[in-house]
Amino acid sequence: DNGQVGLTLPPPVVDPDDPLLIAQTLTYVTDDGSVLLSFTSAPFSFAFKLRFFLFEAIFVAILIAAVPVGAHGTVVSISIGNLFVVAWFWYNSVRCVDITSDGGLRFWIGNIEIDVPYDKIVGIHRLSGNCGICSAALLPHRGLLTNPTDGVAILTSVPSTPFWAWPRSAGRPERSLGPLRCPRLKIVFSPAGGGLNFIREVENEMRHTDENGASGGNRVAKGGKIQPPSFDPAAKGGDFFDV
Image (cartoon, rainbow, N blue to C red; front, top):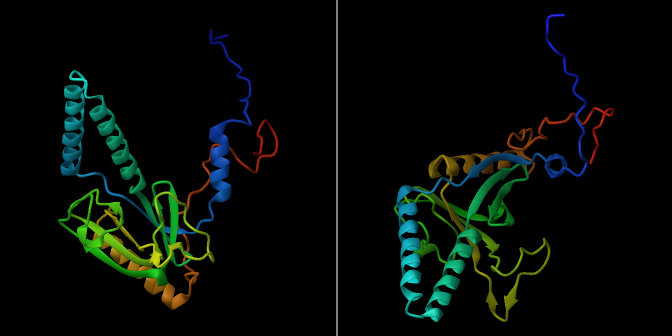
C-alpha cells in the first residue's frame, strides 16, 4: 500500500431534457450541409462605435436634464424613440450571408431567413466611403455597413418584406395594396474578409452553377455544421438517450 486512495466515480448520468443536448441533436438533424461558404458581418468600426456612444450619451444627458423639470412627456418620447432605434438595428442586422449548393444566397437578417436564387440577383456592387447606417442611393434597403469604408450592395428582383410581416411562402402572390407593390429587396452589409473577396466568391459560385447546373455538379459543401462530439450517437448502451 503506497498510501494513495483510489476513487471510483459513478458513470455520468445524461439528462434527456438537457437543453444543450437537445440543441446539439437538433443542429445535427436539421442541418442539410447545403452551405458552401458563409460570410459574417465585419465588426463595427471604431468610428461607428464612437458615433453610437455619443448618440447614447446625448440620450442619457437629455433624460437626466428632463426628469428634474418634470418633462415626463419628453422622457417617455425619447425612451420610446430609443427603443425604435434599437429595434431598427436588430431588424437590419445582417448576421450572416451563406452561399448554398442550391444555387443561391441565404441571408440571415435579424430573425428572418431569406433565400435568393442566383437568377433573382440583379447586381452586386462594392460600397466605400458611405454612411454606415443609410445608403441614400439605395433606399429603401435592408442592412447597414458595420465598416463604412468597405461593404457590398446586393440588388435583387425579390419583393422586400415589410417589417411587420414574415416572408411569403414560395408560390404565393406578391403583397400589394391596389397598384402599390413592395420595393425590390436590396441588402447592404460589410462582409468579414472584405467586399471584393465576397464579390469574387459569389461570382465564382454563380459561374460554377451556370456550368454545372443548380446542384453545383460535384461540388462538396464544406461550410455546414456537424454534430458536436459530446456523445456518440452510435453508442446504444449506457445512459445515452437519443432525443
